[in-house]
Image (cartoon, rainbow, N blue to C red):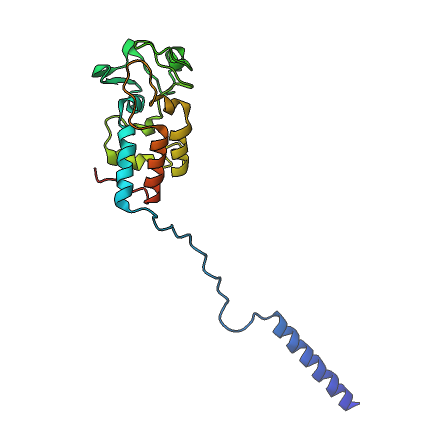
Length: 212
């Protein structure tokens, strides 16, 4: 009887010890999580010098009057400039794009700038959705370096990637007007396709910007 009692006590003790081991945390140092995989930017596939040369092509378009005249600052006043206008001057008739940049506060840009144009030298040029570019995209009176940094900054370029910027320049109908402005207006240099290719080359070089 005494032997059976001792055996029962021993079994009970072993069971309690096993349960305690199961509930206790595992011994040894705590497990560590595997480090997160970091995205590594791809190496530029085009030399920086070639990228800067491509940017010069883009800047020649951005700074040309056909583009810069409507990429104005916070005064919201489009500009008349270029060889066909003589001296630079504010848009005639006291026109302002307003904070809406479409003229909603005064007279809408599309009241005169319709979707098509007549080709007459003194008639208002036309293209779909005529409006000023957002003030964050001011190009007039800006240096090449300033426009370059703005061009690739999603906070200032409409939330676009570089590929989307290239496609915007190539495919947007209002942008396309700059190369076929009608009348005796000087067109922007090159073409939409050439500018698209220049942006692609510049982006492939890592989108370098000039110092000034």
